[in-house]
Amino acid sequence: MTINAEATDCCALDRRRMLGLSALGAAALAGGFGMAFPAHAAGLTKAQRDAMTPAQVLDMVMTGNARFVRGERKTRDWLAEQRSTAAGQYPAAVFLSCIDSRAPVEVICDLGIGEAFNARVAGNAVNDDILGSMEFATAAAGAKLVMVMGHSACGAIKGAIDNVRLGNLTLLLGRFGNAVEATRYEGDRSSANAAFVDAVAKTHVQQTIELIRDRSPVLRGMERDGKIMIAGTFYDLESGKVSKV
Ligand SMILES: [Zn+2]
Image 1 (cartoon, helix red, strand yellow):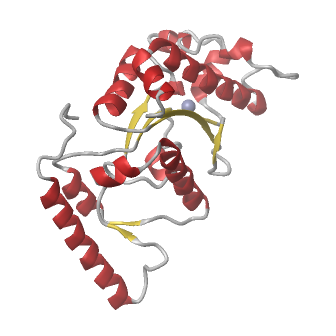
Image 2 (image 1 turned 135 degrees about the vertical axis):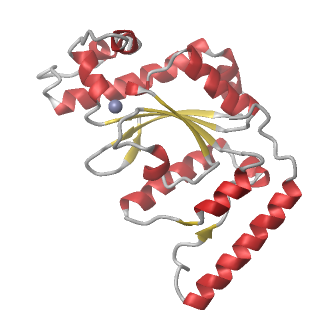
Image 3 (image 1 turned 180 degrees about the vertical axis):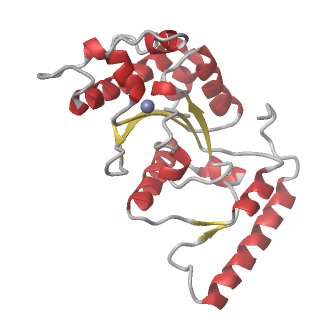
């Protein structure tokens, strides 16, 4: 990651993107297929990203997940995305998500190279380094959506419920605050109850967002000024759906 997120030659990049799009468009026409899923030849341009509102970025993410659930995806030229973003990046969002191997945000929200930052840590818990990363992603690099994404059947949440003590994991689970105690739930409040585990995960997302606002005057100020949106979501492993929390 480079601190200077600006492309050095945006015009050259735009020319390459246009050439790439033309070639892909011609290929799709020649082959008679691919029109239902327009080819996506490059990452977001600065102009495209800057023209989006925070709400439109959220819509882009949720629409991408809807495609994923339907079994669809944008047809991507990964090498074109890699080449077009090498000299500069203009991501629209920064995620805080879990390391869980079943919850890769870029895949489940159909995002490409250069379109989103993604900080992954067990249980999507925030700390000073994550806050600094979010401040870089937004204030320095221009992302307009900060999204905390929890997920169902999260092992870290189960660990917090069970009050697990294990090496450095103890400190990490300590960052979950009082999400377990704060979760209103009638019934079995153990890690064996999937419904309770998911309820705690959603509480944890909400508390994490409050923590972000409380501990980052930079992000709080940008949200107040309408420059960014801070949103919480929950990914259901069973259905593949991302929903707002
Ligand atoms: Zn998890």
